[in-house]
Length: 293
Image 1: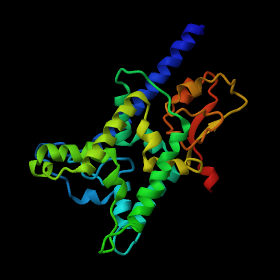
Image 2 (image 1 turned 30 degrees about the vertical axis):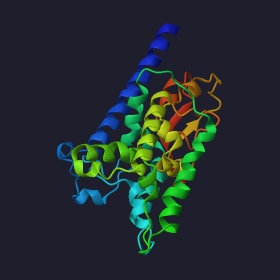
Image 3 (image 1 turned 120 degrees about the horizontal axis):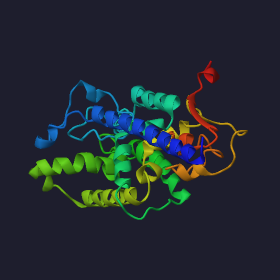
Image 4 (image 1 turned 135 degrees about the vertical axis):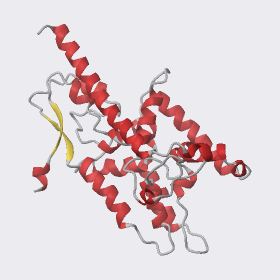
């Protein structure tokens, strides 16, 4: 096989793999947002499916949303008067993380798809300073886990701090559509919404110039899955004997990970781009059930 055919076949494999991933992403997005007709009246679906959590980031208050947001649900329960922690929400997130790790982010997170579409907008593209990737862990620790429990009102109830003060996903998917259809809500807009709108603008701008900016910097759910990446059943294997240190996998990675040096990095979303660009097939994503027997 000529060098040209090898290169052409490699490109075809990358395109094929990415098309498959996009089909899964679109299907997951569609299943998560089945009530598009609710946008017209600004109504929310409150049926039985809302008691279940989406494994990815998708706002509860989005008119089309079928499922709840796990981060919102986690805060709502931990901030209740009896400070109980929902075994369902915590167990669901941990189970998804142990099984798939951040493959959830790469394949079935609705806001992950939105970010990738934003990144396709023509603009100068930038790399993110690695130090910013630790911000999401601080947001998880303080705004999701600590503040809803430690900062309470006279009834002993804590606010869902991340959703209320920061979450750009909620502002985009829930806040703006509801304001557009409910004039009475517009009269209640104050400084807090202005701050959240500013955070949303920064986030969207960041997603246009930096691939998956929100995933890298601001997503507390991604932080949880990232912590579990090293022990997740779905993981990456590297055959060091096959690897020729060409650096193609690192250059291809949308999360700026070097898969050879850190195959199970907390930033890896298991998108598989590195595995199909490797000329020696030294990288592979697979389930490792035998390690859990």
